[in-house]
Length: 357
Image 1 (cartoon, rainbow, N blue to C red):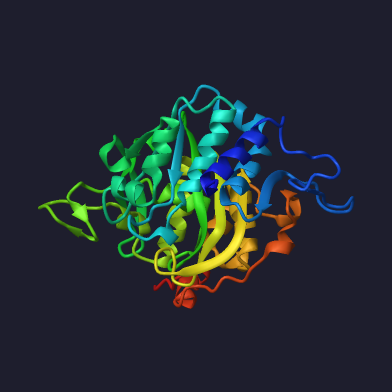
Image 2: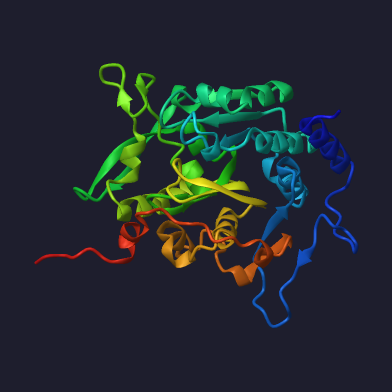
């Protein structure tokens, strides 16, 4: 009896033989949804795939942009960044089969040689998450290295803190800051207890701050050990939204994969509950990908501060009428995700602070 992984591999090989996703009439894998003649001209494309095979959803979404991705990577190192906010809660983390599908795709376009899997988890060594979530097997299968960003070179970046209105220094991964690398964000559809929803941008921006080896489970286990991730959050809902916006030009992904096979609702990004959604979003335009993800979660886009700021600064496309969806119609797959219990407090970013004097 064939295992699920064997079946997925067979699907990969079958799909790899195609010149790309079948876009002709009769294809059940990719249906091009076009705006009518009166609608605004589209400026970005997003692949939306759905089905009972998570890995195949990811692989098919990537195949839509095969030539574009291969050209953009060129000879650059590929950094595949999963979302492992903690090392011991599988639902909150990128699934191993999502990474497997991505590496299989990179192999199919001849871009696997310089690829690495890299992460900095919030509560422990990245290698623990890699082991717990099954990444080690995947990395060995494709011959790619796994890197703990906490052990790599850092660069100092300053962020805003709303308690003292001062810039604060943060040690951030030089690997993710280096625009000569091709950054892939392998994120998940999740609600969030500070910024309403977390998608592909946040996975990169707040994965970049590092911590010392002696910092585990929210506390220093060795004298002087510290974690710089809380500094980047800026001590409040206004600051965290602003810092995400301000850091986006330097830390956005070049390619966004948002796995919504099993999303998370409620008190994410760690303590939420599962949503059976079975979708995947892929796009070279990270903002268009995140905007589509928000739509799929049934969330009012106006509530998400950092993405609205990025849209105002034209960092990508956030107007759904200008995003060309390849694959499944968005409307067919919208689910209303329950938001975090403190969502009303989070929305304080929408109200300017009072200035005395």
